[in-house]
Length: 150
Image 1: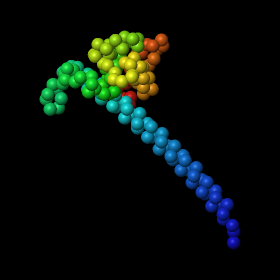
Image 2: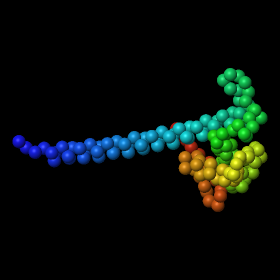
Image 3: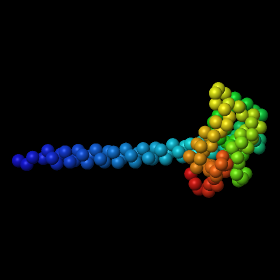
Image 4: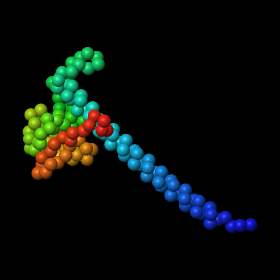
């Protein structure tokens, strides 16, 4: 009778490799889905903010206005939406000008975080997700995205 232990070891090794490859594929797909979810969330927040600023009616027929919310009740998505709104004019914005525009909308940070630091972190996040680019020396612009890009 033939000793098949070595064949079984090889098959077990191949299964381990196959499992690792599949786990890597799943992990990559989950990262892709998470990134897409973040992009959609930021885009939705931007569109909601734009609609709110323009007084667009909700599905229930009640107008939304910028005065209806205080910055205390707004989220990071709202913060991102305001930043993307400023950069939406297609021009290059300096960090200080973006901060000044946010201050004009009465954005204030609670706790130890300063508005400038929070702005920088948010801009870096938006850059990583492909919404803005740093054109150098603390200057930022919104990346033009096609309607079919996700």
